Amino acid sequence: MKILEHIRARRAHIPVRYLFIIAYGRSGSTLLQSILASIPGCHMTGENADALGGLFSTWGAALQAKQEQGCVPRTAPGDPWRGAHLIQPDHYNRRLASVFLEEIIRPPRGARLIGFKEVRYFHYDENLVEYLDYIRETFQPCLFIFNRRCGAEVANSGWWVNDTEDIRERVRRFDCATDEYARAHQDVSIVIDYTRWRSDPTLLKPIFDRLGEEFRLQQIEKIMAKRLDH
Image (cartoon, rainbow, N blue to C red):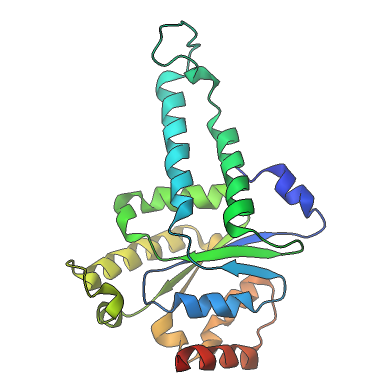
C-alpha cells in the first residue's frame, strides 16, 4: 500500500518525506505547523477536517468487500456481490492517496517535506492504531510528530467550552495511546510536549535532527514570538 509510483517519479530527483502533526485542539499544533513550514523545501498545510480519515474508511470497506465476498469469481448476473472479485483494495488505496496529495495537500514542485497537521483523532478510540498503521503504510517514508499539552490547560481552553465530556481524561487516554504507538514504532515517531517546548524551543531540535535539517533557533524564536503575541 505505497503511494503511486508516478507521484515520486514526478520528483524522482528529490527524496520526499511525509510529515504528520498528530494532536488535539489547543495543543500548540498551529505554532508547530508554522515552525516546520519555515524549513526550506517543506510544504506543511493546516487541518483538512480529517479528509484522510475518509480514505481510511473507504479503503477499509473495499478491503472488507474483497476479503468477505471477492475471494472467488462472482460473475452470475443475479449475484448481489457480482464483481466483488475484481476489487483491488491496494490499487484503489494508491489512487486515493494520489488524489489526496494532489487535490488536498497540493505540494508545489520541488517540495521535499510534505505534510499537514490534524486535531480530529479522539473519535477513533480503539481504531486509532489501525488508522495510524494505515497512514504509515500508505505514505512512506513518514514521520509522526505526536504533539501534546497538559490536559488541564487544554480543558481550560475555549475550544472545548461546549464539550460535555471530561477533556482531561480524553487527553490522557489519547496521550497514553500515542505513547504506546511511538514506543512500538520509534523509527517513524517522535513525541513532543507543547507545555515544555513553548518556553524552550530547543526541545524541538530532535525533529530537525531526525529530518536532517538545520535547526535555526533564532528563526524559530521569531516565529514563536509572533504567534504567541496574537
